[in-house]
Image (cartoon, rainbow, N blue to C red; front, side, top):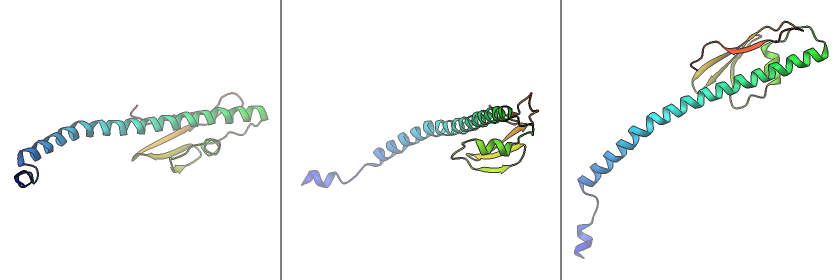
Length: 128
């Protein structure tokens, strides 16, 4: 019976130690989480850039094989790209703008000169 009366909860020292340990864990984990989040955003942007470049090459090849001489636009590239999970905030003949994790990326297309030169897809302002 004496044992039950004495063990009613944690002491103040034990609670302080637990709070300190949680603070240390949070201080280490939070910067790493933010770093991983930024890396994921950049990885997503690079993936979209690769997808747009691949769709650009396929579209250029299709135009050459079919003998089409009219230039294509970013709208045509987006129609041939399979971009999932990222919504466009704006699409025009020369640009595709997407909000990736709160950062706005604008992918641009230099116009192709058919039949000799394909368009080039690039990101003008990047942090990578």
